[in-house]
Image (cartoon, rainbow, N blue to C red; front, side, top):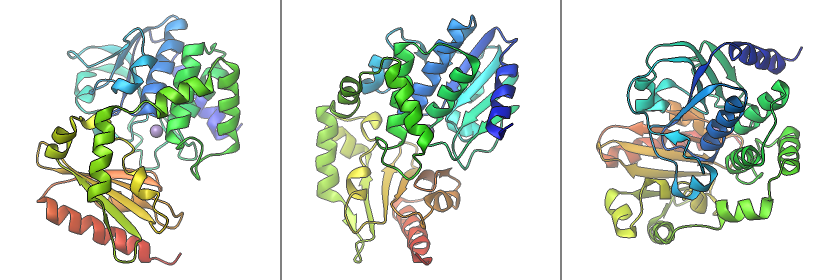
Length: 327
Ligand SMILES: [Mn+2]
């Protein structure tokens, strides 16, 4: 029996008895997190469970159409659940305040694809070879014999598509297309869904892009690119944090760039850094780990304390070191 089949059976066995289930995901949820949390919620509701879906942050406005019933809620107070399932969250800290609200639960199931996952669950299905958590949820549904409704298909396609940069990353494997094919068969209208996901930017986000293009920096050799997002940059653009996802792609796409980096000044004085690599030999997950963060080899992040200038210096020099290892 393959190891992933074994773990899927464990997850399904763990889900047999619980009545009252809570599905949680990481702060500042992205398409993979939202798609995985909500698709699993629909599946479990249809399987007769009482399901709560919690995230510390609200659903990004442009993904709100994926939650017509408003299932996803901010955690209100500590509650008791028979079972908690965390999706797409590498460690308990990534759950933000939701982590503290989970209270006592008999069982914690951890379903994720981050290399850096700390295996904090009672049952851990961690598959770094999977390009998205959505692909794992799709496998779970198929293995369980749960029907995939058109809304679930949209949710899972969103997860798979957004976490692979629309099927462009090295992480894409044959099964990613098999999954996508099954979801299209299940009702996804690819053109319409992708228009909503990729062709529906708010004005504020495009104003932020103006800031990115005006202010980004490039190292003299062109290998490193970065920019800063400060609270005043967001305010000037009329944007909020949910408008910042994917801005980094615009500097990563420069032909000479090998690694790209965004520094965000947070309200608490810390600096959030997001890292992207275009080379298989530059592992930004390892760079992020040096600062207590993590993610994937090609996309990772961390939060640093200390003055912004020093955070920038430390991160850029770590990136520089990572780039100097032989290609
Ligand atoms: Mn993911």
